[in-house]
Image (cartoon, rainbow, N blue to C red; front, side):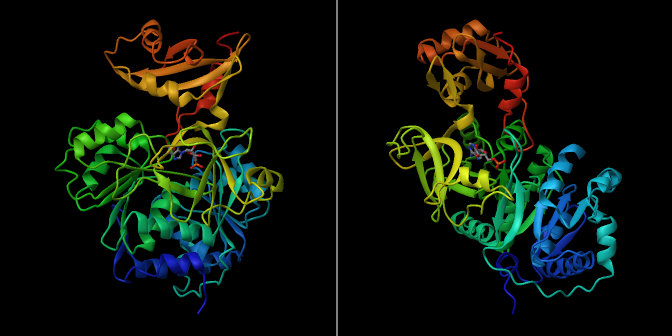
Length: 500
Ligand code: AMP
């Protein structure tokens, strides 16, 4: 028998007749997955894809897209998902860097992608599961001998969202993906009885690995929605047990009056991650549904690192404890030593979940790891007396004003607590005198009468003078990426001349 650590493990528990993926038009059992990935793997091999080859995929979300991911892993190749928002210019960079043996894109993009392909075949797959690739798979046998791989072999390359500099390809091994999903299945108590509402994109680790791998590994099933739409998600709660979302899901769901405690009665778990969940959203959700959201923290390079507990207190504004197989330390960048409890430092992690480095980028790989193997996340964190970790921002978001460090999260939390504020983003902008000037971008609800002056007055007694914003700007919608992260880099670009 061959051994393909990730693929074998994903299909081990689900009974052949049990439902794995439901869409609004189709239903795939675990047996169907075995057969359909067999057909697709045969088609990929016929197109010249072999073990270790990259398969670059930029297509709309569908069950067929998930099957393509699984088939790629099954034949020992390396799955490379690409955000559907990437332009052709961005795609050219990924293709040059990863040199895929096959590119799969939406039929509408084929003419644009073909000239970038460097001789690799370009096949198509649309949201309905049709296209040149499934067309070739139809005539293939549904039996395929799964290709053996070692735990150190790559299963996927995921490019980082690249908020600073060029995006880097995180090399994710079979071990990393398998171990992280196994840990989460245990921690979050997933069983074959679970039904997950899957409304996340699947070009990103959250929807692709956390959601999909956890469900399949548990032998559970997912209701695969093509995108997040609050009404559809509330509708899907009948008969479902879990939701994994980004914070925006939860704020949008709270805006729906039909979201009530009765409506969520059958749901056992709401999980949030990929961006900070406002403590207020956490409290509002608990007040409305009686079910506290479980917030966890991870990143492309590491998968999940921490999680609030399943049984213990899920504390708003924290990301919980390190996962059982993840070592986490918080380091003072200047001294290189671990900080004391309650002090802020850079989070570093080590464990089987961590990537094997950056694709064809030994310099960035070396920069990202300490000699003892810890990966430097770049996130700033703090640990409290009970061991709960909180994220206070990204290292690069740190503001240095007049030589003093200001952690944006601290200022944002004060502003967010003011009546009528929906959310805030605090950034540092170039300032002749201070180097950087603390600047607050605030989004408020309708009818809120806060002014720049009243915000500054409210912060006066609460924050040291150097932490107080020099300016407060009201912005209707803070810019976000698809995973719900506020794009501070964009705000910094847009407002860089504010103090000029
Ligand atoms: P990505 O690689 O796109 O998944 O982004 C990872 C980054 O998202 C992390 O390094 C954090 O900065 C941020 N992130 C993920 N989960 C959380 C969370 N629960 N709270 C705050 N930030 C988070």
